Image (cartoon, rainbow, N blue to C red):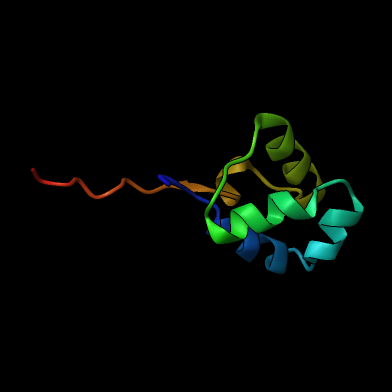
Length: 72
């Protein structure tokens, strides 16, 4: 997946918050699990909610990583 959410978990820690805090404030456990495992993305409403809860910008949550090209 070209969008990586590892920065989200660093931002959570940096802001002194927890995943429990996010769940308690409307971020579902399944969304957090998908992001942690790299198996899913999130919509703009969720990004907006995370930015509000963590007082950050979208770039503090995710980054684009180009997938390696496969040679045929």
